Image (cartoon, rainbow, N blue to C red; front, side, top):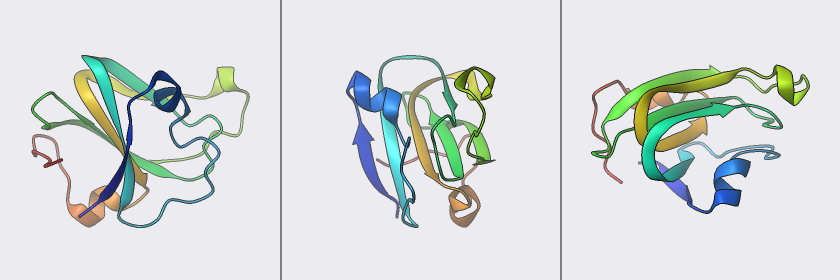
Length: 111
């Protein structure tokens, strides 16, 4: 089981895991978007490696990116990840959690 912190407000959605120095094992951050769309993330000001999972409105996994590394360059040079599929949610966890839980595309997540 993954304990999640829910992000809904515009501020929380923008800030995400920025400036955090750790994330406990089996913990994550769930982003709930107001409408389904293509949502990307970046690692600017994110200090810890993360795994990211995007979910559609049925909570089926539509995209996974593992072991994202902190971006130590200026913001304009930080790569963006994900956003290739329409999603309603995204889940960020410490790196290695996707493998630990055996998460895969098409799997339904219970929230």
